[in-house]
Length: 189
Length: 189
DNA sequence: CTCACATACTCAACTTGTTGACTAGGTCGG
DNA sequence: CCGACCTAGTCAACAAGTTGAGTATGTGAG
Image 1 (spheres, rainbow over the protein chains, first blue to last red):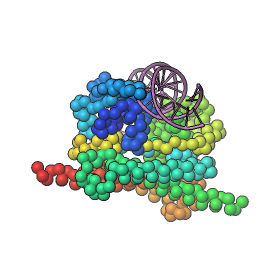
Image 2: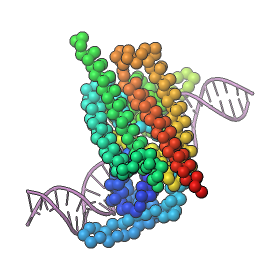
Image 3: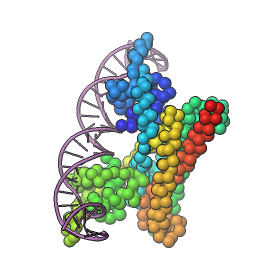
């Protein structure tokens, strides 16, 4: 029931089609809530029939028609209710962690996964940094944080950034540890 | 299909009953994979019928009988296959992030959630630190990492630790930002 | 001219994860 | 000796998330 709230929050940026959202998610909410287009369309239908959003069909000349969704007052209220509620802490839920937990049985494979993940995280950091600069749009962070109408998207972006940086550090740490142990185990053959 | 792998990895520590696992998870895998007892029992049944684990019924004198599960060779192999596979990166999936994304519509409520989460994370850090010291058992980290038979559990614990530390820092940052904006908005009434 | 790719979706089936209530014996405090 | 809590589970129902395939139109590259 929380994809719903992510969608409500995403629509604060203005109306969007399901297709837009599926892609926009990638650039705003994706740090903390990924989903497939199918999930979105299904949820959007339900939200519409619950009166949280309204759809306006936009006829397009050289493309299929699309349905632009926007928040209704009742949707805004639902969002307010959600933000006011308690939020259970979450765990990380990452397969790589499970693999590292079992690392001692299959060291080389896990090292490969760690290297791959480290690279992936570095690429993501670079993307996030570009996004951040675009949000700041010339202002310093200070100026932005005091002056902008909305800071929510920036703050969540910061969380995504620090999460990936942490991933990079941790992968590097695991790799040196496993490396050193490998050396130890190989040496006295 | 990944709770399954978490269970396999947890059983590397030795045989355990469903009940044990449900609680042990809390102290080892919980950083990154939480679940309710029901999920565990269901999964254990399936894993048993898939031949990945075997159950040995232990009659107890003053308690209900329990079934002790342990890895079979085929379970070990499944685990090795899993560690060798690719692991998709995950997002954070935290309701609090959704709330912060929408923070600008309901600042006070979100600030309360941030304060609460910060405290919770600090408590978790304290617990993890105690666990860490118990694992080290007098050794320095260096000694442990080179000498221990298994380092997987320690490495995942480190990830849990740094995740929560990061949470604390981020909550603090969000709070000061929202605080300052609140001051700005209230001042010129 | 054709084939791949982008827009904008829909349908169906499946696997995971969550919630709540229930059984049944034993232990400990007041 | 009564009620609360701990061990060690089971059952049923539901909510959420994932996967894969299919539709229809238009654009651009070779």
